[in-house]
Amino acid sequence: MDMGYSMAMHRKLAPGKLVIASHNAGKVREIRALLEPFGIEPVSASDLGLPEPEETGTTFAENALLKAHAAAQGSGLPALADDSGLCVAALGDAPGVYTADWAEKQPFEGGPGRDWYMAMGKVEGKLAELGPDADRSAWFICTLALVWPDGHEEVFEGRVNGTLAWPPRGRMGFGYDPVFVPLGRTQSFAELDPAEKHAISHRADAFRKLVAAVF
Ligand code: IMP
Image 1 (tube, rainbow, N blue to C red):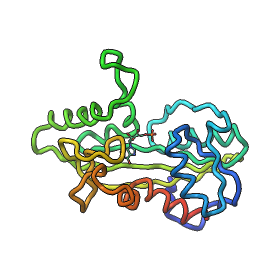
Image 2 (image 1 turned 180 degrees about the vertical axis):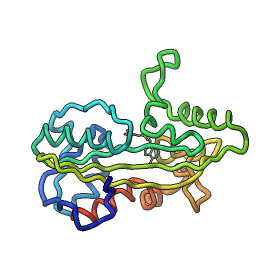
Image 3 (image 1 turned 60 degrees about the vertical axis):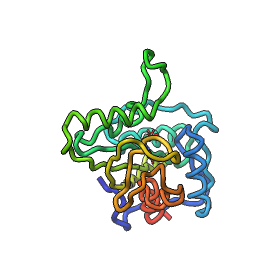
Image 4 (image 1 turned 90 degrees about the vertical axis):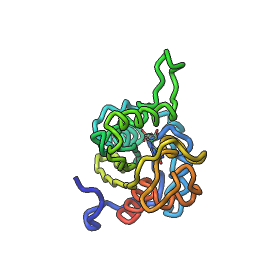
């Protein structure tokens, strides 16, 4: 798959409206700030009343593409979607595309709802089963899919490598940030200043590739 490394074949994104295929207000705000300098007017899928498709893919790219295709078809505008997650080497790249699902509380745990400390504990529990010498390498992936109403698609993948710490540390960020220590740092993503995290994160990496290719 073309992950955005060759510059020549990419379709350029013209100034104008772009649907952000996410119902997460935080994500939409972050993406709006990144794209406004390029004359892009982001509108969210929820503002347009577009339904959220089920994420049935088995890869980040499949899930990002199915969200972006649904939004482009539903709106008649170019659409951008992202899918992200944590991969742990010793767990065969799990939780991967199921990163959010691992945080889903069952009714006997007080669910429905998400508990990120429970999810981090699940990862740590599985590593503990492998013994004290288990490889603690991990990485976050962010895949961005940009799809036009005629079906043309562009996919960009961002990554940040690190190791898993235990116990969780820090109060900033979200999700699995308190156990993820990026390579070359001693602090977890939840201990780093948000600006520092955003400079090195998987999402920043994916956006740099998108900006280089389509503007
Ligand atoms: P989705 O991309 O909205 O499906 O979510 C994937 C899940 O991966 C999120 O709910 C987070 O738990 C996790 N995740 C993605 N990016 C980050 C990050 O930067 N820090 C911590 N967790 C993340």
